[in-house]
Length: 579
Ligand code: ADP
Image (tube, rainbow, N blue to C red; front, top):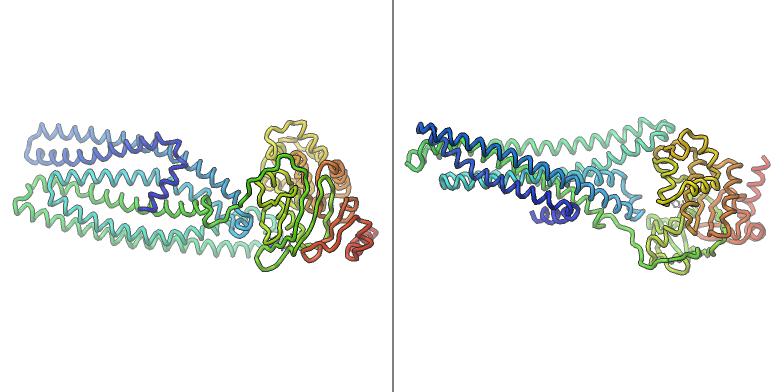
């Protein structure tokens, strides 16, 4: 109960703007309670008049009952309409906030959880939470209205009121037991559903690779095992449900039987007239069945609500999933220098990827980084953008520790053009607009020209309005990279990091891009991770990485003289070209 109230307060913040709908719901609820007090009294009066042949009065009471029933229907419409307004608004605000929070989680947290963990919370849990305000509110109205019925019974006869009260307490206790058991099973079920949702997402996104790997059977086996586990968890829940429904059903019948015996006893002792006893017995279904149904559904709903709230607020409050932390310092006009000082880093606290790395980059110069695959080159870029945090040592931008800088000063000034840039399922124009809302068509054209993309775009039927598919699936690797380059050029970030960005391009396009990079040279700080030395030979300085550190640095000619591994790499490349 305490937990539900705490969570309701939290969720209310997201639906505050729809307060008036909530007030109408409460008004509807009060009308419901009044109806449930008045109706049993009118009904009892009707039965008495009916059984004692006072026909005119009986007809009058029947009309009154019809009127109350119509008001009851109207108040139901009032509640349903307003709960929908409140529910829709709250879900929208919750999903918006949750989406933003997912984007503020630490990258390592995102890496170590399946995508299903977040997708399920974003779509399914927010929806389940909001149903507390529709289904839950309906059940609460039912419970409160039934309290009205109890008051009516108390007015008619207090003996029967006590009997109803005891029955209700026992049945409520059984419902609490049921919902507690169900909640435990539900948590297990939802965790398993997260896994299935994650794997299903991968099935769609990775369909191409699954086909090419000829791994349909083994992937489907993995998915199938998880689906079986999911349905087992679901079956466990249903079993608990069936068992308790049976026990509660039997308890209800026993109470009904007891009531008959008790009524006979009360009539025989002249405590009740037959007519009133009949009215009370006739009304038992409304009170007992409604009340118990309402209580058990409300309990179930609030358990569901609490589970979903905990899953959602685990992200929003940053309790279970760690959020990124940024400093407050802001760089107004960045120069574009950065430095790694004794930086150590590992992804898993075991295998050190960077070992006391020292590296100094000056503004408006162009640098190259070479080294074998897995040496930690991309990791350096990730740390500079604060996607991960250094274990020790520090990274500075314009002399300021990035731990002290705000998000905009870091990510608003750096672009990474990666090996496999993510292009969104939007038109080419909208993909570019993502980084600059008020971009003009002219700017788009200039950037695409510089990135050697114009010719390709002009060949498309919808040109800049062509939608490129999820992850830019309809584009080739080279086209995706060129679009990413155009995106960076539009964003005009002072520091541009190329991560083997030109590896997927043919020689001609690569030359064009090389030219584009050359155009940027004087005004931007450029760092290029490259496989092919030809890409970086003209850089102002080249770093050769080995064992998570810089083995040597210098210009191309200097490295040929002083770095044996670099020289070997260069000779290997020349030989490969000659072959
Ligand atoms: P490079 O760019 O030099 O090829 P990376 O920086 O990509 O190397 O990777 C360095 C090491 O870190 C590799 O051993 C790689 O397996 C590991 N690694 C890279 N990314 C992750 C990650 N997200 N989680 C765990 N390990 C990672």
